[in-house]
Length: 304
Length: 300
Image (cartoon, rainbow over the protein chains, first blue to last red):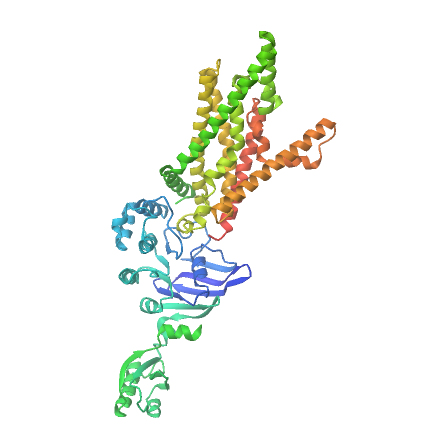
């Protein structure tokens, strides 16, 4: 098993009478791209902030790359953070500000690192601009650039594409994809389609508790199921489908989606899909598409 | 990277930012204008009193000198304490310098609060503190910001003390450069030590409050509380002394107030001045320690 990039053990956070996070335990291995999912008020941002050391847990332990998060200097140069709601400090030009932060992170050649980070977010031309003169999107990209300074082994991103135009959002997704395998990335986001595309795994939170965590295929059921979008009005041969070797369950929902669950190992999913398709074709049932698993969004809506 | 290296980086960055901002100039102008107004008012008042003395002495030089000496002793006693009033070093400084300096010392805590009330709270509210917290120890952020503010204050105080002493050099006959330089150094050291203790208090308030406005209000609240504690405690002690009885326990409250030790800083006796200096150093250390504890345990 890969060593943990971060680990939460029985972590709780209470704000006055409100229990924002309750006995949350989660372990994410190094090198993965992981999502933090949940509806508003689920405890995502609180969990994220505890991982960054911004919030102190009321109970439990948070470890980052093997060290307690509250140990002095535990995050320095090892963790890059994009906080969702932090504004850039006033009275700075962007370039010198990033250089200052790079120097404080212990990055060698801080100015070069600052320029490289700005280039990564396609903002090399704002080097001399004031931190308070940038548009919302630019501010977000500068904040992202500071998270990437010195290529830290762990990058924590809170809503990295929220409020960005589609072109810049695509650039950010490309950036995250380029980190895959080299750095551990945690993304807290409401954009489930984006998370499904980028992440290897995710944790779903609701009311401060962990509802489900696992690999993306485990969450979406992709390893043990698929869906067939049928032509409405067809007469579905469900009995024949259930007779296909490996099929455990087959249902048609009101939207004419045939949902099939099958055995996880033998026969392989390809064999099961081929068997089901053959039954449908033999029965003259038309279909438009086949997709594996359940969409993450559907899964999240189901469990929260 | 060590705590000291981090502190140095933050100190340099904060100092550069402060130097770039117009706020330092505005604060310097505010302090300078206040000092000039005090100089004008106190000089005018002293001139008026002296002319009345000359009038009442009926032109007799000996009587005039005696009245002036009594006035000098009385004012010095009020400004630096009776025990210190008769010392040669105090007599060497013109009354106008001591009076204006004492007045600026009274308002310096409020000025310090205006200089540094948002040093931490200004970054907690908009959460820009998070960019620092992730790459540095919280203790380094506190120390770096405190030292940057302290550096500014030391500079501002020197400029103001130069202004006061320079004014006296021009306007007071008999006040020479030879007497002005040691006087200036003493006043500067006293003001620096005094203001650093209050800057530590301002830092504590700035750590406790997320909003700069609340930080400033809390700072002023504590200043008033300290002034009140000194006034009540000293009043009770003076009353007990006048009645020839032991001071009540409540009179001890004055020792908890930094302002109680202000006069002692100007005392010519090294031991007495050293005790006051120690009190201010302890207040500064205590406030900073509390600020560190608060910052280390609070959510940012």
